[in-house]
Length: 301
Image 1 (cartoon, helix red, strand yellow):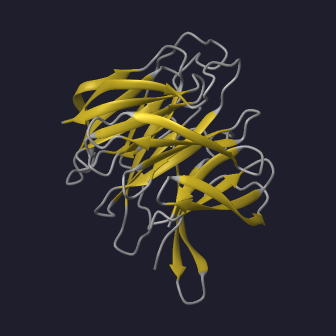
Image 2 (cartoon, helix red, strand yellow):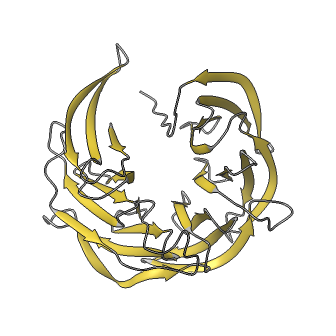
């Protein structure tokens, strides 16, 4: 398992490797490497398990690390920084890389840039010491002031969805050979615009029928969408309270039957059960106190 340590102190951000004992349910520290960028917030590992790439938000860079056979993180071999901005000078005076997402075939890698209103794209070649290569289409523009944050590919590989932290919407794209063609922009609020949004995380159920997005601000809710498998279009079907404050991230179980939300400010993990017939979520009554919970992952062993 890999984690990033978020820090705005220069040189303090890091990525760390752990081993997990399924019998004792215990994590053991393996090693850490500096993220070589300020405020690391997101990391991804390629399908081969040989590369880890992380996003440094405040300093606007991405770092690539080889992974050894024992799971330890080797020293960084590549770092790319970005300089750009957009129309909201309070939030977008500089680039802010907020996620690292591999394409369905791991041949490309995408970086939503909240500060520049772009989804950046690089080719990925894990056989070289510097796996990130400039792509022909280096970025896709998003709506000005939208602040793209996280993105997710549909299981069929044909569609991609990006949640806006600042714009209050989800943009749907048709995906083919490194290109993102905009299909739809839909608000995660039924009433549309409001003065403040704080979109956070986005995931699709394993069966590809449902998209879920979290919104913090004053709403603290999950927005539920059905997905048309042929067109990729979304339809808002409802919202549920996260029973906590600031749902920064959430996870869907591998069987698609449960959703667990991490509420950062209220410090609790909340469990929902999914109705597979109508794609609704029901609060199970299970809430576990974990101070500062900012991320949750579900793994079946």
